[in-house]
Length: 171
Image (cartoon, rainbow, N blue to C red):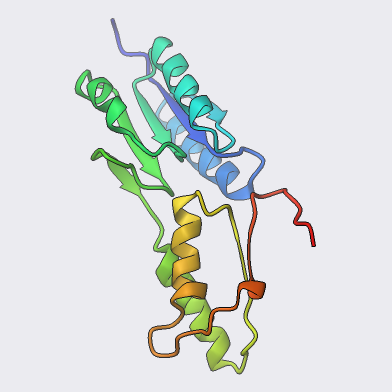
């Protein structure tokens, strides 16, 4: 089979600003190179993510950019060996080695909390995404749980909240 000049971008939620920006940036880059982009949202459901990947593979995509929710990516090693490229963005691959582009989540939040403390703030709350997401766990560790290395925060559960984007909290 010939080259299809297609890739697939799978993000958590295309209505999320960050996910939309990732998709837009990749689409713009690909368009300049005459590469077509398929896209989909997995809504933090590994079954949907896997269904999308299988569907896009059956359509002949040459590669993937994944903002993954899956916890085991070893299942894609065979496809990678067949020449399908996998690259991960925002969330690292698990149980397999693939290229990835990640943010220093813990360090970034730690710097933000340090900045707040240095400017006299002492009642600092943490509002984060679902703890099942690696980046949310990293951010929580960097800012709320561990805090700045030289000024650890006293953890208070009433000042930490985790929820999926768009979900309300009771109470």
